[in-house]
Length: 327
Image 1 (tube, rainbow, N blue to C red):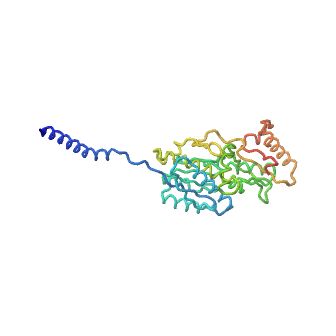
Image 2 (image 1 turned 180 degrees about the vertical axis):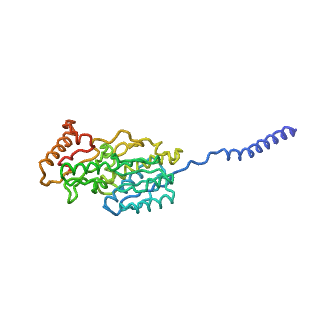
Image 3 (image 1 turned 90 degrees about the horizontal axis):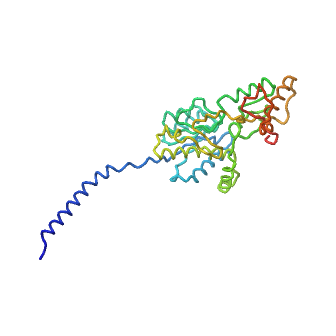
């Protein structure tokens, strides 16, 4: 005998289950969170054509190596444009990239100009790779430099007045960190490059294998800038608002040491090196005495041992005299 009543009950239950499932589908679809925003482009404005194409290539190569070896895949796309160390070209490149909706912008290897403000106004996190620190940095920016803006020129002017030496704080060493004295000058005040030696040793073999040349200071600057940019990308992917991404990053360990969102530690005492030419001009007795005070109170040897004689004139200034081997 067939149990028709039981069959009807089972059929009714099945239809009810299907109906409930169908009604639930739109609700489930609506409840599903939207996919996380994936930052996909990093814009970089570098001095690709001037003053040194080789250094520009190294900066770009350092960025690419950091990007390719980043564990947070999928890696963003790198978009590079040339500034030629010209503020107008840098601004034009920034406008192009911001119009293209890059997620993070890197600039300032030699000039900054209006680029930081442009990035802020566009709501894009900004990495400044400049050797100098802006006095009024955007909340959305992070800076690699340790020297306050215009401080180097102030010290150079003091050195010129007291020692009689022709001292420049505007040589190419502020761009490529190669510490040499330009022609027509007796000395140059250059920013120091503080390197994390352990990280350098880890990265250098990979760089040499990939590009068939040594890992250089310019490559390290590009690598470090990309490390910071990728930290911002990670925060964006975690849900940070663009203008808060750098604040949420807080601190990044790079091949050039730790870079902090708000570095309140002050300017390091050896933030700059005074590089002297092999031959110096004849000086007056007063100028010779002033130079002797500089050499004794700021010499590289005494700065390493902490035994520099005190100097009211030069003691608090954040520079040291470079060792002869560094020239």
